[in-house]
Length: 125
Image (cartoon, rainbow, N blue to C red; front, side):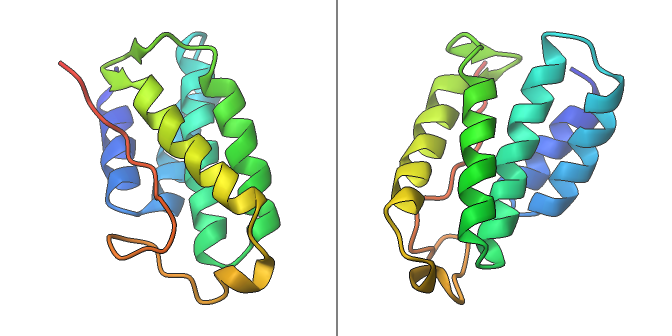
């Protein structure tokens, strides 16, 4: 995987969701399968979290669902990423969002003290 991919992973895991989107989108535009869909799936989850941080429940829910659907195509581990773990975390958040009222996410803080389970990309050796 190119160094920019690992930069995007680091941005994602440190909560820089918009920067992650920009980094992975630049890769996605030029990529071929199977990496192309991986980049798109991760960047869609990143944008979902960006929307969530801006109290956009609808946008977050839609993009989280689209990202999860793309990532489901991959084996348990791909490109040094624990896809199953990332998907499990993302789906858990998606379920919370699907059953939340928009007013419950106003002024939502993302991070370690978040009221919602925030996905992280887990690396494997």
